Image 1 (cartoon, rainbow, N blue to C red):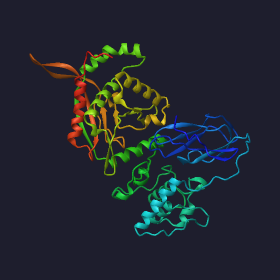
Image 2: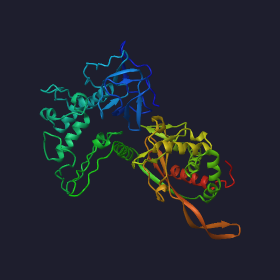
Image 3: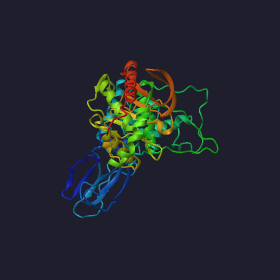
Image 4: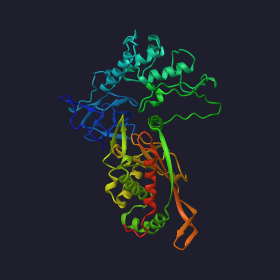
Length: 471
């Protein structure tokens, strides 16, 4: 369950403000995906009130008070910041909706972001010329106005935009979307065209790709809106599939990671014959005793944890010019969902667990991921990530680092391979079980020596596995 603000602020003796709670480290906002209660409905204490989605996980928020829901301050698909009032509950049994209108005042987070953006504009000597509001009375934030001024969007054009914010307010996303459509269409437009529903004017193939200035590249989920993408038109018979919310978040995160970290990948082939033979011998007894499947994943994770202890500078994050050396070893495991999307639940303090504990944690998190039952804290705090590409029959991969970590390992498929076996009586050819380990790392702080030695050490631990080990 997410961390709730258990001291709701009372509007008066009969009304309680329900605020968006803190839902984990680095989570600052959430999208309202579905209201589970309508205005006028009775709500019990801790009864699910609303479904929200963050860039990490979807979750139901329980009511912090018993009473009647009298106001919803955010509509479906709108974004609320942590601490925002999202609903009002009357505790005196009065089911009449609150008559106060929904405010369009910017949240503290928006004010800070827009103030910084405005300050940057002024620092560049570009004083704002657009007014805060037009003839229609609609308010335009400093951020929206600064973007409009840079792109030559007039106040008359701003007035034609239908905003997606509270009260029809034009947001950063709205103005950037309008600018992209305006450029693609070859000039100003009074309406925003729907994406590829009608073929748009395609840029000539000879037109060079737009250059993105360093100042335009930022971290976080705004990447795809800041980078100019090619305009693509649909051909007759093509099917247009809009990305779902999670796929958009994954896309943003991957683009951000490749821009933030210079990726390097080292490969090592490991002989895991001892592990295969041991698991075949132990898996039935383990399932009978623990009621769990014994897969290869926890065995590989145990070796990775040991190697992290040997090379702790793999277990770090970068903040500006500072390196944050993590005390805990929290292993994320990339998990494919039935929808085809990907999520990374985290095994906390994996270095304090034995193999049985890691195996149970792996199985539990994998089940919860597939069933959509992960909690926000289940996907927070990872310090190193493992992805098993061998599950799909791949022998190796070049995984993208899961920010803000600095390294990730892909586990390839285990295959029977002919190999030269050295013995005291000479060399001979035998059949061995082998796999590739692919280690991608951030070359800002992990050099080739450290990155290569780390993956080699993981392979050494796998190859030295004790076939007589007991559980």
